[in-house]
Length: 274
Ligand code: ADP
Image 1 (cartoon, rainbow, N blue to C red):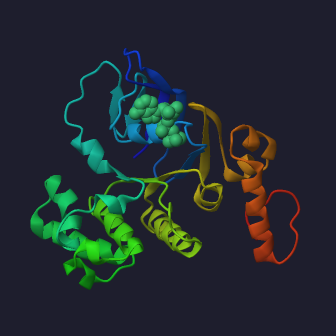
Image 2: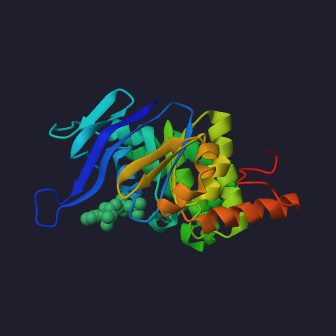
């Protein structure tokens, strides 16, 4: 399933004295099976775009095509549930949304809310808990007895159990240590590769974008300023700096690769194999 944003503009509190234009004229397409990173500095409009991806926000002008549905301003939408089911969003710190007595109930909650039978939801819980790297036994535990990393995996299993066609990840590695980050991103990447799951990674981490995305969309002050492969993006340190994606971060990334390679690398590199 493709998602296409066409000249999307969004104003918070439109028509009120507090009106604030958050994004303007943003167009890009995420094709089925792709992994696209949307990156930008704080306040660049990433969260606003994210909320359009499954119609939690409707554009003030322009349109969002999600599979066979078009969401646009001035039109009353009927039944957005199919869109919400097809596009699963893992919000930042998803573990904060756990609330049930057991992990099993928590994972089953979403699918059952979308009309899946209890029996089928339980089967999905057993399957997805393993896919996120946890054991089946954990299903009977209270989510609040788990470690932070386990809680996050449970919350992700809850979104995956709805079996979305597109998975949107909002800063999925926020607050994790480097090892946890790598494990988490590898898990998503495996899902993307093995299941050909379309993925949209909303992040300010250029490392994650460079490591995992086929295509990177850069937002700056509410506008799309770049769309291309990570290689194209990272070859232009000057523009990155202009967009608040500081050169220091690129340089830090370069140093990290050099440390891995055990030698100095020429220019801006994306991986030590290159
Ligand atoms: P990011 O996720 O990249 O940090 P946001 O989409 O949250 O960016 O914000 C884009 C712009 O919209 C910012 O200027 C921000 O202050 C503004 N904004 C975000 N949410 C609201 C809101 N609920 N009401 C008014 N302005 C908002």
